[in-house]
Picture 1: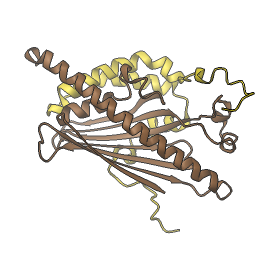
Picture 2: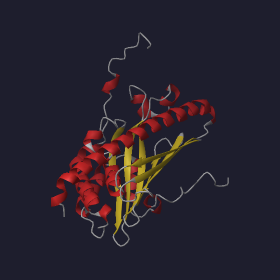
Picture 3: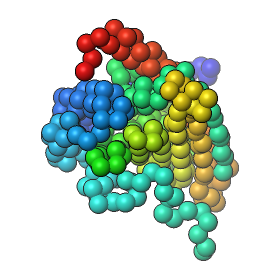
Picture 4: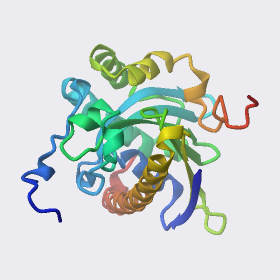
Length: 101
Length: 196
C-alpha cells in the first residue's frame, strides 16, 4: 500500500508465449487431442500395443526442433531420445547431495 | 532444505485420474486456476509396446513469485518484468506402467538451478482398499537453496516464498485434477453405450 507509486497496470503483464508456442500451437493441439483420447480409451485400459499418435507427435516434434529457442529445453528435446536420465523418472538424480566432495 | 509430503485419495479409478493428470496443464478450462503456467510442451515421448510403459518429458514454463529486488538484478528476465517475476522452466518426466497401473511424475526446475533446486515427486496408484475405484496420490516436494554466501539471507526468503507458492499450486493442481475427473466421468457415462 505504498502511495506515490504508479502501479497502473500490474496485471497487464504479457504472458510471454514463446515463439515455439505460437508456431507450433496447432500441431500441439492436434497431438494433445490424439494423445488424451488414446491414453484414456486405450493405454490406461491396458491396450498399449499400438501407438495411435506417432504421426501427430513426429510433426509436432519437428516443429519444436525448428522453433524452440530456450537452450535448456532445446537440449532436452534433442538429447532425450538417447538420454537415460530423462527417460527414467524413478532413478535418482545423477549428482545427488550424497556425493563426496 | 525444505521437504513437504502430501497425500490425497481421489474417489475415481486409476485410469481416469491419470488421464486427468495428463490434461492438467493443457485443459483450456484450467487456465485461470493454473495461471502461473505460461507454456507447456512435450519434449520427449516413448512407448514400450511390449511392456506397456510410457515415458514422457514435458517442459512447463511457470511465472515465479515476485522476487526480492536484489535477485531481480541478477536475472535478466525478472528485471524486464514489471512486477519482478521471472519465467522459470521446469521439466516434468513421467513414467506410466499400464500393466502395474502405476504413474510416477517428477518435476524439476531447469532454470535458476544456481539459486534453487525444486523437485516434486508424485505417484498415483490404485488405492489398496478399493483398487478399481479409488486412487492413492502421494507427493513429496523438496526445495533446496544453493548456498550463495552473500545471498544466503535472501535465499532463505526465496526458499520460503517458493515453498508457499508450490503448496498453493499443488492444492490448485489437485482441484483441477478433481474437476477433470468429474468431466471425464460424465463423458464416459454419456458415451458408454457407444464406446469401443
